[in-house]
Length: 367
Image (cartoon, rainbow, N blue to C red; front, side):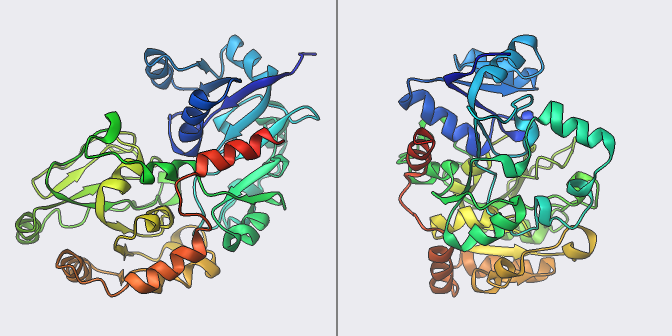
């Protein structure tokens, strides 16, 4: 009943709550390079106000005007989940682009071992049909970083429409920021940053990752002697009200800083089962896996094909003592994983040129 505007593109991300991830970076690219009407939709009044103040086109997804704009748009571009954009219904004149939010180590969507994607009761069917408007497999294009991940994504999304372009957010790694960060936050002047980015447990409902070394004053002094600081950015599914801060350790709120900014400024990455390390490999810097629990027993399974290569990327630590040892080795400049890590990087990333947004832009324009 509503005419489709072929020159209108709606963007969404961060579960509708955050201005973040691949959609954010591609949206900003479109605003600079496209003559089409591009706009962001969000459920968050805070995000709405922020984008309005920065003169970026934005609508509240649940407002009558927001719903109308989404219904008229010919193309929807999302990345985190289908609730990034509500009320975009599939159709012959419409295109759906799934940027997704990272190449998976943990099993996702239809491969997920939990129940969330497998519910089939009446309410879920109504939600899928009338609110979400489309299913994962309805996407005309789903992105990957290389052919290596294509079979995994085909299984996870029940589609063979996979394109290896690289992810839009990784353009940020290749920008020449000259220590000014082009308006982005410079975290710590003159210090080596150790980024700690663990994943969630049970979507924030399980026992979450704790910041290491909080009770270890001696090791904190050791980090200070290296002029280093560990910065912990929790997953956005993890709620926390109080944040620790010292000269050696700093905890951030989940939405305080875009993950790509912390990754770019980190000299060393510590993670557990988060796939952020796949992005970080583009920077050719050390990676440590701090796996203090058995994630597969408490949560979802892992893709064995990806997990089997972890041992070639960086050391796997089970305790804080092991983590200390490996961290000091990297701070001392000892990196025995550099050669094998670069070999895996070539497997995980077909492109390492920083032209990801441009490739996706041309791909979408051809549809």
